[in-house]
Length: 83
Image (cartoon, rainbow, N blue to C red):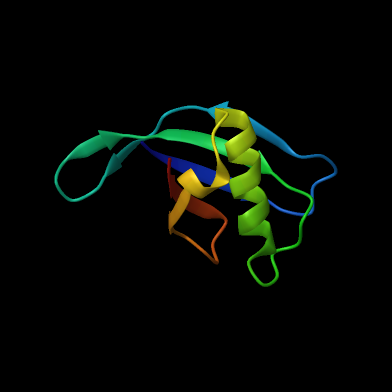
């Protein structure tokens, strides 16, 4: 399953919130992807925020962090993860 994540770094508390489902045109046709807003305390330096987002998503979905991969958006606030 692929999800869109809107990252908020340097937050006071870590949390994962599900937001509306936008329709995206991915070239083949429109596809529904679930969007989540993830807040983490880490700064976006050296990939530390991405690692914190993966850990937060792993807790939210009750799965191992190794089962979550960053597909795109490593240096962007909007990212796509595959779980």
